[in-house]
Structure formats: structure tokens, C-alpha cells
Amino acid sequence: MNIAEQEQNANLIPTKHNILESLRWLVKDCEAGDSLVFYFSGHGLQQPDFKEDEIDGFDETLCPVDYLREGMIIDNEINSTIVWPLKKGVTLHAIVDACHSGTILDLLFVYNHESGIWEDNKPPSKEPIRKHTSGGLAICLSACEDNQTASDSAVFGGKGMNGVLTYLFAKAIRDYPGITYKRLLETMHDEIKKINRSRCNNRILQNIFNRKIAQDPLLSSSEKFDVSTTIFTL
Image 1 (cartoon, rainbow, N blue to C red):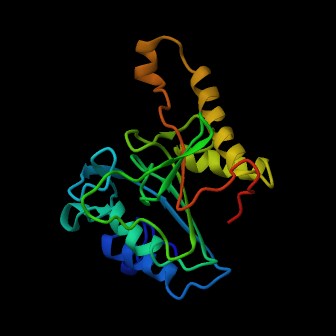
Image 2: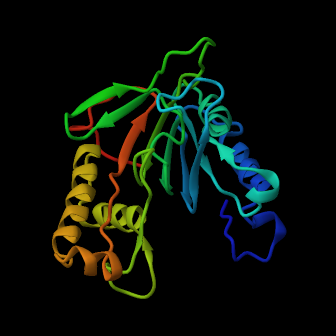
Image 3: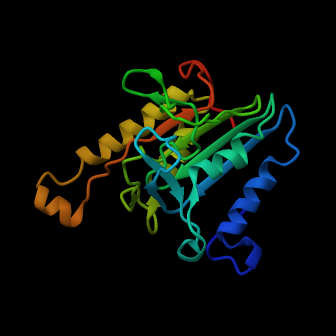
């Protein structure tokens, strides 16, 4: 199912209701062997966490077009809608090109690409926290860490602006068939560093004309796996 802001069909406009209905549709009747994909390119924000289930004290959110009236879609709701229902043998990949999207699925583990280890995303809480699946596997590739913003850029050529994560993800998949999760992350990080090195060295002019891309694509998962040998497959 594809919903987009320019749609004329009211059921396909990315309102809060339509996005949540699409997420429910995605996981409905999922069975072992199914491979599900959720892709979101849009705006993301943070808001105070009142359930004490976030390490940084903030919930990550997606912004539907009617967020001023209906509110944000918070990570807890996304987790309960498309992570909890995943049965054994079902795999979900989420690709989220939005600001503050690092732990937008509230998954249990976050991969630290610098140290090469999986880190727990389980904060202390007075209440039992359910962030796991029902036996399936959920993997999320996010545009940036929770405290970062995600960029649109024209540096890639072509017409108009491109989301940095979306462009670099598609380029890596196209250039390196059979790429592993580790190499996918490394390739995107290296491309961002290369772009920033090639930009204007004068900080004043850089701020005016050539703003630095300050985002670190992030991988999170409902369970740990070997990113060095596992092939990225949708």
C-alpha cells in the first residue's frame, strides 16, 4: 500500500488514521515466511516520555499531515502495531527517513557501528516493558540517531532534493548486490563523510551555502544477529 501527500484519494493521504490503518494492514494475517517492508519518508519529532520506557526521556514520533489536529504517531504505538504482532518466521524491515528516527520502532537492540557491538535499548522502568515481537524479527534502518535531524540534499545531482538516507540506501543496494548489513551501514557513513569533506572549508560560507550533513544512519533490531555475514534482503 502506498500513501503520499499529493494523493487525491482521501484514503491514501498520510493522515494519522490512514498511516495507522496501513500499518495494521501490513501485519494482518502475517505468516511464517512472510517478508514485510515499511518505508517512511517525512517528518519526525520528539516529545517527553511519560511511560519511563525511553533511555533519553523522549518518545520519537512520526508526523502525519494532520498532526496539529490528531497528534503525532509515537514510537510506542508503532511498536504495538507492527512489532508485537510479528509471529515466528515473519521478518519486518522498516526504513525510516525522518528526523529523530533512531529508535522509532522501539526495538530491543541498537547496533553501534563504531564499536561493532549490539547495545541494549532497555531503560529502567517501574512498569513491565513490552518491546519484543511474538517470535518474528523486526529490523529498522533509520536516517539518524534519536538526537539528530535528517537532511534533504541536492548534492547528489539530478532534479530537486533527495532524502540522504533514501538516496544512499538505494545507491548502496544498487552498487553492491548481496551487501551485508555491516557494509550497508559503513557505505552510507562513508558516503556522508565524503560529501562533508568535499564541501566548503570556510565555516561561515558553509553555514550559508553548504550546510554539513550531520546524521548517522542507525540500525536497530528486535534481536541480535551477525551483521558482518548476514546479507541484507527484503
